[in-house]
Image (cartoon, rainbow, N blue to C red; front, side):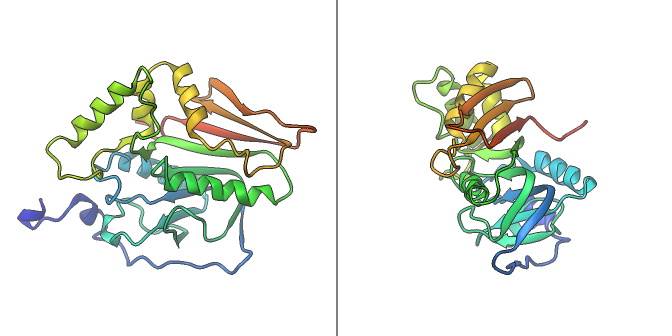
Length: 255
């Protein structure tokens, strides 16, 4: 399309968007409320096939209807590569590696973007680090699976589903330019390739930060998949003070 002068899909999506203006909240600022949405690096520089775009747009729409703060984390990727239809979030925060510019003190944080194994993981660690020094209370990190992208590197080579994941990545990258930009899949696609919910839960338990290096020992940490499958990542030591729940839901798309 670019050769025809039509531009890339991401560039077309941003044709109506204002320039990105980063906000730097004063030191010590805490974003408070029942919930917030944080989107890490939703750019075609890393998700070149826009695998997460529809899921992300539905999620942002859900957050808007619920009147939640919507925070986009962006690095130095070209502004035209950021592909969310809604390009006027509550704030743009500069984030080279998934770090957070300000504190987020909400009961629930919805997360999207990626990579699940790299920058989005750093966003999770940043949240856990912040919460570790606040008065303990139950928290939820909700990962919307069709709005999260991954490079598949956390899939163990010896896993029975590893060949299927590798084949899927080969298919989506076939005929594309070299490099790793096209070899991406959504978290929903990964869990679908794993197939068995128990195996998916076990993989999530290995992939998501267990918080043992960050959260105090009184925290219980668990993961819930699609509202029905549950696993405990860490039991509290001593008196239980709070529970962190990773809540993995398939999608916010309703039709």
